[in-house]
Length: 373
Ligand code: GLY
Image (tube, rainbow, N blue to C red; front, side, top):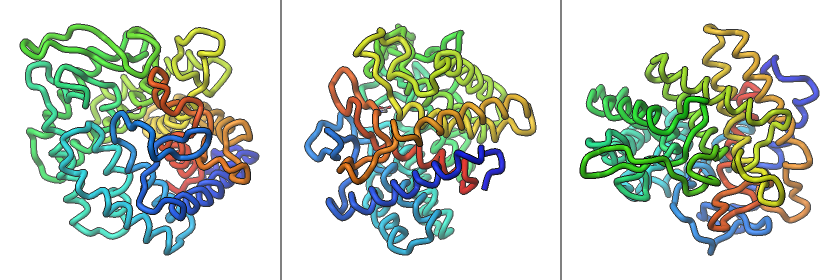
């Protein structure tokens, strides 16, 4: 148990594991071998547009977290089975999400077995992701095209760092470092906010402008993008020990806290206008909670006061997300764990619904808070 967790929060955190276990068992029984992404009126859709196929590792990651909590052999068996289904994705050139897919599935599998095959799968995935590098603009391009850089890739670049560390491949490491510096330069704003996308001239490599797909506007703060950056740069610092990475994560965290103000759960975009458009994205909150806990852990010996502040902010977020307003009640027929998430507002995908990464990062944050990870 993490002694810093407020005493009255602990039962709520434990309830999240109970809800997640019940929902996961039911989802597996209902649709074996299916990787859910977002719900429609509370039910995981099997016919909705994916936009891009990036979520397999989250469902499998939930199974690993549940197994680690319970020691249940059936959950372990399912976690291994679903991870096996993901294996071919390590060579997938269509997505920029190989960190999301493999670090939440094969990393725990490797940790629990020490089997070199799983370490190799992650190395393959890291090498595949590195093939997205654009030497002219000096970034890993998004699935949209060679001219596009996404803030989300900061959560995936750690698998390149992993592959570089495990193989000693300096060129891989250089790709990852270069991507981070370009992202900092073109997507992280002076106030610590972030743009979703940067567009480049592929012929010259010149940066053209900031843009967005899932945010309100090119110059707005899409809350999930900010959370990806905060968590991503924190994770990268774990590999690089480069103060520049930690500094970006802290600027993101400060901006997050400023923009949230008194309400810990953010709107889907901090600049969405007041009124019916300004709905919550609980998944951004879950990512930020887990990222803030990671940042607090990272800062423990460097800045104990800062660490305590970020940890307190994470607990405040978790207190809200684990309460009745956000945590699903399985008895109602809702199939996700965390309600009020948003996938793609403009496309109308998963708006005010459960989204698989929201469920995953909530459970991950809870596991960290309970001292399980
Ligand atoms: N594709 C990543 C996201 O929706 O945040």
